Image (cartoon, rainbow, N blue to C red; front, side):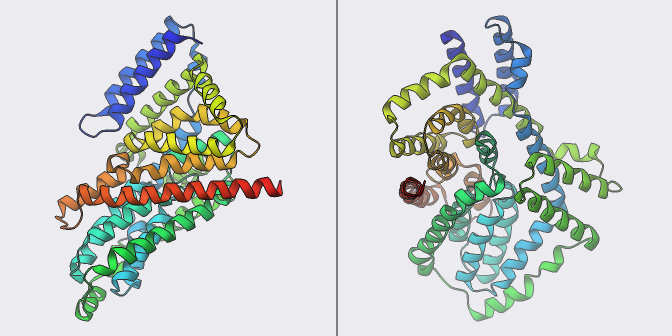
Amino acid sequence: MNIPAILLILILFAILMGFFSQDKIDYFPISLIIGCIAIVSMILFFNVLEEQILGFINFNTLIFIFSMQIIIYFATKNNVLEYISIKLIHITKGNNRAFFYTICLFTSIMVAFIEDLTLSLIMIPLIYRACQILKIRAGTYMMGMTITINIGAILTPVSSLKNLIIGNEFGWSFVEYFANMGLLFIIVLLSTVYLIDRFILRKEEKPTEKDKKIFLSLINPRIVITNKKNFIITFLLLISTFFFMILGFEPAFIATIFAALLLILHYKKIRFSELKNEISWELIITFAVLFILSNSLSLFGFSELISSSLLSIINENIYIAVLITLGISSLLSAFLAGTPVTILLLPIVSVIAGVNTFPAPIIIAFITGVNLAGNFLPQGSACDLLTLSLAKKYRVPNLNYKRLLKNGALFATIHFIMILGYTVLYTLILSYYL
């Protein structure tokens, strides 16, 4: 174990996580400086080869991030997501409770495939506009959306970068991931939506029949289709992308193929030289730096030290293992961005899961901890912060930081208890049948 190297990397990791988890200062130049310091220090002072450092980077994840940004760009540009959203809202016919359930169910499922910020940027203006027409306050609908988006993030391995990294580490295919997380997703989602409806929404104003008729006349999904051919092609390719992922093909490979197809089909109007400005290069490079920092900690013995200490506490008790995994991942993710936390904890959780006969409950606890902790504190979720920012922009009267913190923390606590109960029951069933 190399103590000086561990201390240096931990300091660099803490600095980067601190900048990554806030919005006031651009984290990208900081990540570049930290990456350079880490690489140069490892080569000059700790005798780490350049090939080893390159091997620290999870290129599959970076390729997936790059390709999905291209796919989502075309889906957004051709208004595919906006059309689907407006179509579903139109189906509710102005019934505010049906409207609320539709928003929550749709966003929680869509975020399993579409990045949460993209989905929020599409949905929040639609929710605001619909509520304006119906003459009801938009706050509860926006709050329900952002809480259920965090729930939907646990459903598939491509719903968030955190899940993709965890799925790759433990070798869970799309189907295996869904089989382990699907039931928990349904339980948590339906109970959350019901409780918000039962104790919050039913006490609020309802639209009049006159306002419902105005709503139906003004909300028309067809108005967003500007080029029918491009819309249909993009829609079919988007569906095909996720279909092949569900069949078990490598997500990075499938995303790259369909991103290339979209670029070819749109080459007359959009070239990559124009599109490259839409890609978040700073995010890709920062994640590469995070992978280098995290895996270098494993190389220098830090992960082994922490995991061995935790294993002595766990003492082969899977229930304690689940509690510790869920507790640590939730606590850190409540205050810091979930993806860096995932990368930091991954080697440690891998060791804990590897020595247990039934690793699945521990992996489930890890996934839910880094995803659902965003409901504890708004600053723990970029989606929550975006929702608050847009609510302030639109001057929504019944949604502010205090209200989202109060209700989000309440539901996060309920989710924590539900996850513990689910993983305990899951373990008992596995112990009985296997």
